[in-house]
Length: 232
Image (cartoon, rainbow, N blue to C red; front, top):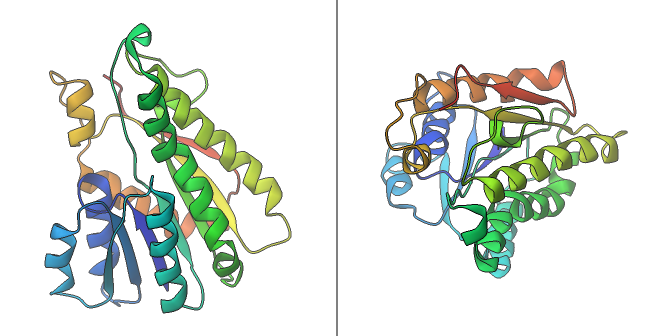
């Protein structure tokens, strides 16, 4: 089975790569996209099923090149996990135009164009599952926090895209769902809430996402799932 994971060099993404890479039956080929691939290169020496690809997903040329490489290397994509994310914590009045662009390019536009580019390969898999990693900040009705207006709005856009594509992809084998992640022990959350210690580790969340990706497309499609014990 062929899997593509973005934001794969650290945090939840890195733990996800390891989870898929070191399963007992070793049945997965993993394409791991990240701006930095140093950690991934170390893993690659232990298991050649991993293909690290250095790519800034907000750079359309780099993204197209990376995805063309994936397309040349495999005949289908079974699982796509849009995990990469960018968070900027700033008061609403201080957020600049370029910062909004950066957040939406990472959290919304990149997943949009990755799904679009890989649609033909996803459609060739009988069990294709796209999992968009959103946030409780983008979950309607959840508690919102000062300084995260741009971030939360971009994640809300990603959840809406998930619902739209579930409708667009009717008649294909592709299922698509979004996980709205709560507080997890990651560098990104620590920057936003430096005094808060989350109850869930990146390893634990990766385990949940792994199981969800492999199994839950058999039971749901177009769903926005909150995954949170607590918020800061």
